[in-house]
Length: 415
Image (cartoon, helix red, strand yellow):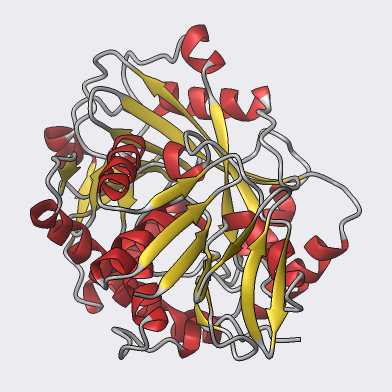
């Protein structure tokens, strides 16, 4: 029985543990937190074949420069001296080209569609029920310029074979009447689905533990011991954990851990915020509020409002002005809806691990035969959880990969 240590207990880590367990591996998951907070718990819960355009796309830098110094804007960069961020930003600029988008969009589409199918397979495989609905997602806009852009993407999505409807104001009001008069239309990606992430990841962890996976929480991996190009153990403050294979699925903390192994895995933490409203809102279909860059999801017993992208280092500081921006967007886009002070005070944040080119790092490294990377998913971490776990298990167990791993290779920014 192969002994595997997974470093990181977010959605990529627990899905890796799930598929490794199915392959007969003995799995230990180590995480520096108590596994109740972070991006895997507070995200919008989307399974998003519609999100096939990489974050590193033409125009994003120009738009970002307009917003970057406004701490309440959808995109914010805190001014600071940070060599790793500067290096990452240069990679991002180099990647944000039309050619790059054309090359990587099919990769993201394939990963998203296969991952969605794997989530649906889990419904039959797991012995606990979890919230899963396929109502699609609305890309709702209030401005004509946004409408033009979204309709262009919708046309592209249709050419890619995705199920998409373009709705005018009247058509939209029939399926989601709680949207306000400010909203002039939406693109409905019927191909998308959604879940309640904090419930699922909690219950999957319980299931994994019942089936033999060991979780070591509030335990930080500080270093590794290496012999003959093989990782022998992960070292914490008081203990050493030996294994045959290691999986690095540590989100934003993947880069500093990888650097201890002399690997260049450039990832920056893109902070997102969310707050939950535990009262009726009338919202029945998930929506992305285009101009505000906010996401709204009807979950199991509550409605979640989430969004924004903030680069300010690896911290969980909640900036009030960014929470207010999401709350104001909810008021603008929906009728008779206001997020009250208590709900705003309950806002939390999580760090999305953002790669420079908009696709994740998944696969083995050329430097260590027994190390697999699973990180850098940005805003698609939840959506790509199962396919990431399956690919990790295939790599660890030396099986043929379900997808071509070359575009998402951890070596693509090799030193």
